[in-house]
Length: 313
Image (cartoon, rainbow, N blue to C red):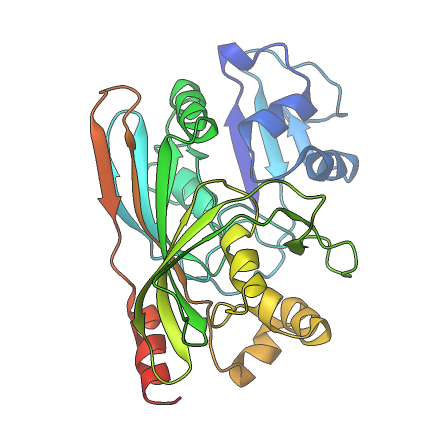
């Protein structure tokens, strides 16, 4: 599988490694360096090294190894689009960026390249969702839109509302969780987090919506801060783990087995996704100055989870 791109004038003068890291954000700098070292990159048909300097008009080719990828649901929906932004309703079981063997079965790849003709080669993700979290994702179409949207998020002028199904009948109508979150250094999993006094300050406002059977509840979560796995960690901390959350709901050995061989573990799992959905966002559009709100209905597989829980399944 070969991908190619032409160096635009504003990226002229960058090294190959800097160009790849800036232009194709679905891989980290270290991942791109490894690909260069393994001979997977060419510039104008010739082998290159990481620090070669590019000029406008150069053709960069990435010869990606043809590795089987895990199945993914690439059936996303475009809710809204203008000259600067795209608003997408992402299904569960779809990575936002490439990771490991997953290159094509990601949202950013599908938006950038799997269109005829490709129209959004510079699209950049604004708010990320975990693979199994469905709902609203924003993409910026250019650097200026990306910069302005990230400024809104940094200034906490970007509201996100999530719907979740959690284990246990919650005993409150509303709750504000302010526990700090840090990396779980006791875990074998590098991307696992926990409530930690030395972590970063976090605030999540929760509201009960309804009971879902005898031992689960549907709640609304509004993260004021935007830490990694914030809602999932806060829910686990208060004793109401999100239904279907494998990382924070499974014993680690079982989780690692599922992560490494999901096609073998999937049939035995009671839930094929975690019950977390970004159902709404609101912000002042940085180019029109209008307050905009976007909503994404609960997907069918989320609704079916609640129905099964009500039935005692």
